[in-house]
Image (cartoon, rainbow, N blue to C red; front, side, top):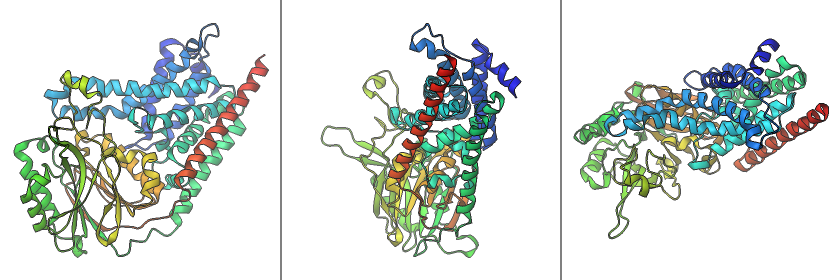
Length: 531
């Protein structure tokens, strides 16, 4: 291994950048649909050795000294995000005549931009780099800060955070009930990068010991928590039906098909209960499943009332419209409606965190004048964001915390308030992205929110992956991609998390501070020895 490390350290120019790019590509195997976390035990040591062999020119300014590290980090990130997000281009091909021109921006431009966060991570680590375990701590610190920033800068896009690689299955998800994703990001990088110490020797025993202890504790806690009794159903018990219609996205956008799309949802709603089971109390349709403005169509509400039995409630995604006042254009919201058996809307919640360029157009005054529009919003001006998140009240007095589409990936926005609800309710329309890794990645990230909050999740998708997930992240029932139908089950109950959101935040900064100190003192010792 030392010979391999030496060869990688001696790489320069294009060869060094290319190997960093390949390491990033390899790291994508840690994410769904693969979940091969062991791949990171190869890619991160390679990244460490590349940084080892990329000292900056001391005669140049700060940027010049950090340029080798920046280029390595960016290349690693570009490979990772290019290979992990290429499927975003599918959404632009639904209406190819309007949006195919933007394919390079989505498939190449977005990964190139996101790679800047990893360039920052490696450059930050390089500032406190040394020759022992301290450099592993430095890399974990750099990635921890970069991933934390990626969660909220420019509205945030924490998709495929490195920490998810350490949590491919429920056994390895349970640490999320103790620490937040930001902390797990740092732990993951430290554990994955630690084998690099074997090749270079210095600090290997201490560094590998820490990594082994962290990884063993991660697994042991998973075994312990899953060995506890499963969360009991809510009282009174609620039976939930998930409706997955598998409607082609092009069909949903066709005005002539809207009635048939609606009828398809109604038909699935009335399918007899499975194996003679209890009739559902709650029926859940996916995001924008009602393909028109519901409040403008009283006949649609009457049709819903006809298919619902007494006491049943339909929860469905729809576009909600609101008059802004005389002379002002109407506002449109990506929303969830709760509708009772009399066809009355008894609750509504609007999406708070919209998708830039998908549901609204940033810098709209400028970009709209160039003829641009949001990809997933057919109404003028796109969607408007809600100012606050509204809990939905369901049968039995239970409350649901609504998460529309990719809102489920923002752990920091959810964690504190979601504990007030009995259920996490995630509706989505991943049919935009076809049969690609995208829907699997989305489900995996949404699933982690149950462990963090100790709250079960109802998830309904137009085409995969619809599921009921319990408070430990364990799949109760589900419908895979391209499976048209329904599934019914009793909703599981809540489970106490070990820590609250405030404590998790303090743990993150404490852990980041400890990594920084280890790296900084190692760097000071390295400089003293060198001099």
